Length: 244
Image 1: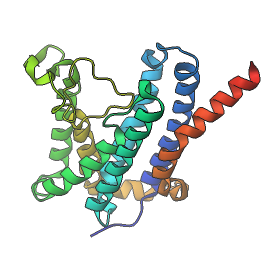
Image 2: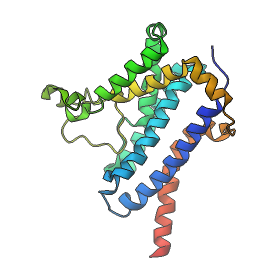
Image 3: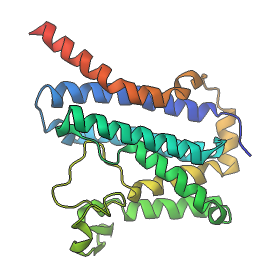
């Protein structure tokens, strides 16, 4: 059974989409056009980027409960993700996107649909804790190990030698993607959102908050995601051209 929209989730997604547009305009300005390759690596820029990603993925996991047809939604998201890959490879190969956030969200919607019978048997608080622990344990999977500081397990190097496990989170040497969100660790964060919304106390508290209605922007988040990058690039290029 689907639920009504949540103002908290709509507002969180709307703020994340606005922050994402600002981030990508800045990325185009400083990195693509300005040639500052170190810009994304600054700690405060990385924190900004991560805050956007975490919000999007957590909200998407929570919104899974509202979907009338999550399999169809997953298909649409994956097709849009493949479209972005095709366009970036053709237009700007140096910034090509391979398995970006849309493919992550699309595949996560499918995986959660398959796992739902088992996940529904898990108490929400226990599921939330387990999902977050798995997220933290696999956060550095791309670097070849799992675990936390002081307790890590190095994974076999041969797991990182081909394209088959890139989707899972094991990129091969030389793999580059300007927007890479593999299933591990990010599907675990998606599940955190799913379990968080199953907690009655959280839903009730969210429903009592006097929040503005941001559904108009939230409903159009996919279209904004698909169209904002060329607009940001054109705007950044135009401003630089006028200033030169």
